Length: 142
Image (cartoon, rainbow, N blue to C red; front, side, top):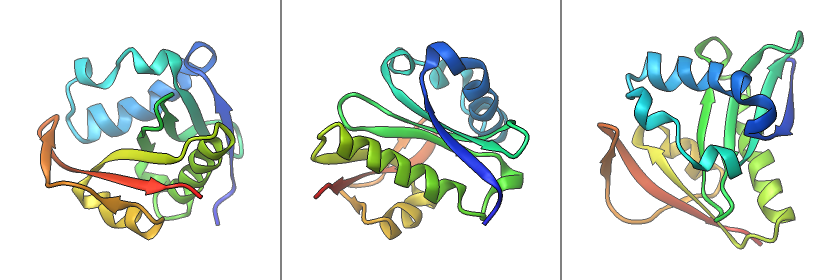
């Protein structure tokens, strides 16, 4: 596994570091309009930031107060080494600590298998979000 750390943070303290990853992945790589990337949920969400050994942001994700998780992103050069899995585990733990009974997300369909491997189940049919095919998924927490 690659050498990285995770930290819980919030938008007030780490907007610039979180934005580096989200801008690179969602806006630049995937072509999502900038106006759709940033929303009011950032201010109230719990954010998880993945940092490499020298403290450079390499991944991120967020957990909303209603149990929705999202904005999970890992820089291309760091994919496939366990960062996404670690981010998801950290979000699941944070949700359990907060007493949430269900985690929900809107998965890009190409990533649905990743979430399914972590126990999420698809609910409903495929739909477009920001011009990208998605499927709603959920995980019942025990």
